[in-house]
Image (cartoon, rainbow, N blue to C red; front, side):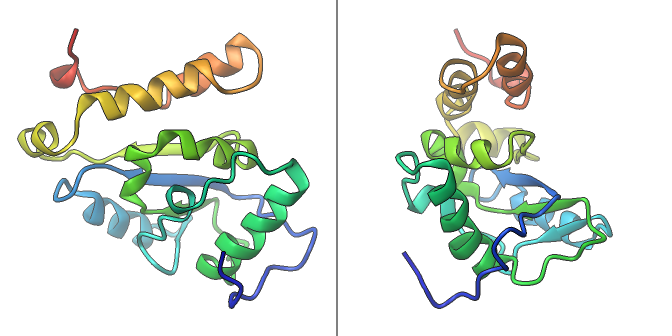
Length: 168
């Protein structure tokens, strides 16, 4: 992993929630990220698409090691100075749609993380993104996350397959 980034001080975990913009190429994710960047309550990562959680498999890390790794490598590199006045940190890594199993550590650190699935042009979204990728994220939320059934059901609600893209 990278080591050039300046880490936020130990013990300083952001109180802000995390939102990720995911989706197929050419389906409006950059526009969504721009809207989020311009919102006064949101801080977008310094690079629109860090792809951090899709590049590194952090699933095997214990809680303390995971927190320190993400503090140093993700927050220290892409959110060097977190504005205390914002409510939400935003990551525009569209690749997260294709690597849902790599998001489990993200959800361990930000249990209330949200995912915005781009697809402003339905024909493009249908062509570029398989519904199976969205369904995989939904299955992942239902079957693999720790916690009670109501917690899992609440997480599963984050992933919605558009009505026009539901298959059998």
